[in-house]
Length: 117
Image (cartoon, rainbow, N blue to C red):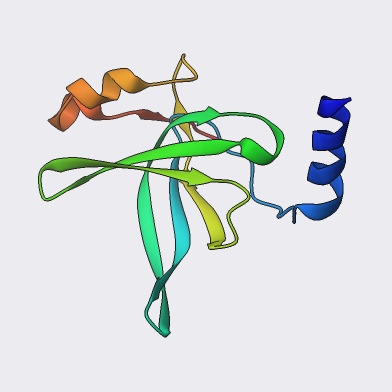
């Protein structure tokens, strides 16, 4: 009964947005709306997808980039109203769905093969 109520709310009240299909290893750019006081701006965050977790309305994805020599990770929920756009820049070839081993790699070792075609 409880599961049916949750499913009903997810289907009828949560706004669903269409984004391109991507998976771990892909390099994507996320446009995210930042609200500072009364001002709004859109910030772009480009990096490699480490994982996609959750199902339905609670689905998230984690992106990692190197900024100033320091690794920065950010978790974005798919159903966030502040998420405006997702652009897939490169398709990567990895053999795992969660590529946390990338955290320990730097430089050329941290490269991911690009899918051709």
